Length: 342
Image 1 (cartoon, rainbow, N blue to C red):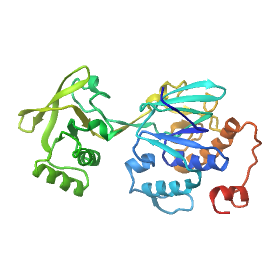
Image 2: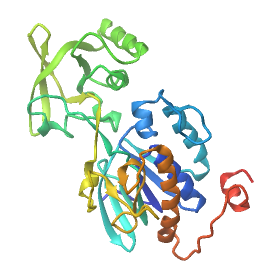
Image 3: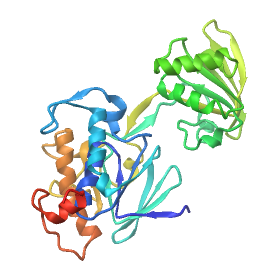
Image 4: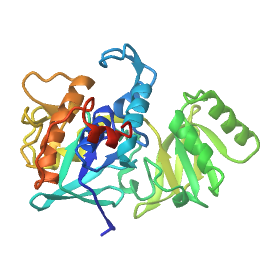
């Protein structure tokens, strides 16, 4: 087992609602770690519409998804949360009353007294490319994310895709790879123009290869790739030696491992008690788009309200010996000291 990371609360999801939960918990002297499958904070706002305007955040007439994430990060600075990005919580078990142990697909192990699920409509999962027989290679020599760059040092790498992720990792990994090949179905890329220019310069200099076509087949044994076949637009097949493949075909939303955590789901959503936003498993809370209840509105501002009420109940699990006294940030000196404004 990995070294255990102990915290008061683990928040699953680092979107706007998960970030605001850090604030509400912090006011109550509750420390939090956050896990998110994305490689950045901000959740759906940051991933799907970073520049799209949002008009219904109270007192803010207009803000972008990216701007909202930045503002929330600034707001929670006093509470110094710890983020674990690019990984997903796979299992959760009770090991005490109430103590939970959670593990991620990156091998991290957490122990905490309460869990807050703020995973939006689920977790963003990488789309699997339509390549026959790819499954045995997944998580062995086919990777949908880069957790440690050094894993790919001195390897023959095949990066597949034409967006920002494919181009960014092409540029980052090319210097340490034995040889890197980028494959895209057409000679037209969706990524940032500057990244496209840098990639083409590397190709022109002979520092990497660019293949226009699609991966049509894989070779290897016991999950380890040795080669891939690439079918060009003219139908011709090219064989490329490959030690590892990184497909970047975008993301799709799935409920993921949450569905196996013992909740009675309603339409792939988690029912909650509307007074606390606690699930049917004591000590586990669900806030934001992942939950359901009568009258539910899937709005960010609703998630903020849910985070505030959930934090009040979380205090019962984290500090059972302390009486909870409700205070206002406008008049409480103790709260203002926590925020660094007193």
